Length: 421
Image 1: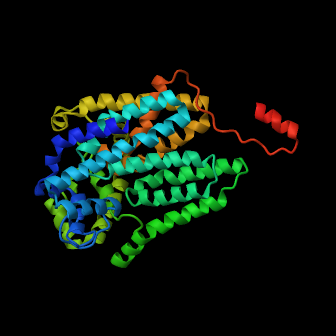
Image 2: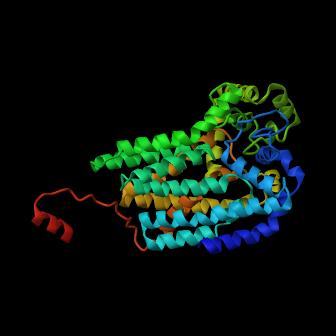
Image 3: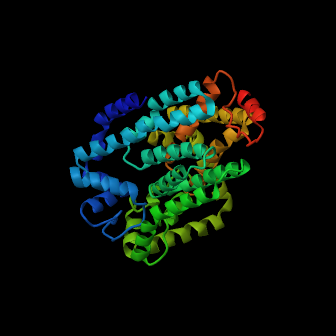
């Protein structure tokens, strides 16, 4: 599965890398601008212009891309091929946790269909082979951590808990939205271990300390640079403003963003990053308070768009987004099947279904209220695919049972009877 997935993605890279090899791409690509600054030795800075240090994005992926630019040239053809190939590798490797998660929960047949489905997934191919962003890394880390969280429910291994905490820290410094899901999965594992009367407090505490140790240097850097506490990124105000300023024609008003608007860019340069983000947050909150019904309606539309790719059937909109109609069919079909699979899993074994409900319910929640792009939803695709495969390909709707702990008994004859059962 991994080899086939990688082969398909690399074949697509050969046709797409040119789109990322032009200096003009920096005009609307803050990630590339941050990586360029790193490659030139200026640190994480200048996402839109020469304005100094930035906390607009967490550091992991900009550092990776900056290293690629340093080695292979800033936005050169070679660096574009390397970056897209790296994303393709990350996407292909997602087959591994995806397969084992599906097998643990729903059996071998569903796991095979899910793994091969990911290898040929149109979204998985596009996001990895034609989009240089953190999405593929986030997808791999979230799926891997979901797998570890399932194992934690049956284990109090200190090493496994430390791995979970360390990877959670790395994932949070890649894309903080994962923190909408991972702490809840960890708490669920603790609750289930506690119900089994198994040790959980000390391993879980070590996991938290490992996560803190990973993220602390970034927190310290931000405090030292900006003289205020910025835990992961400072761009929430802009994200809220871009999606909530009165324009319902598109899922995002790009003319409200410094990378597309000379007016906003001039304001960003004048105020500096921290003050600009605070101003955008204040403007967005003021607008939402003045138009609560509009905000509720747009939040619902954003939710529908994330799950079904349906925004508007207006001809003017469809001329701008000609691929929305086929994407609507694919996205809504998979989402519908996934919800059917989740419903059947809850009917059969709620304990197995609950972690999936946590991911599907919590991961996209912030995007409903701020703004979205289609690739924001993509880290959920593995879980959508698992549940859709379960709905369609499972021979029966029985869900793999959780291991049942064997109580400690002193009577040898009772022990033999338990073993025989």
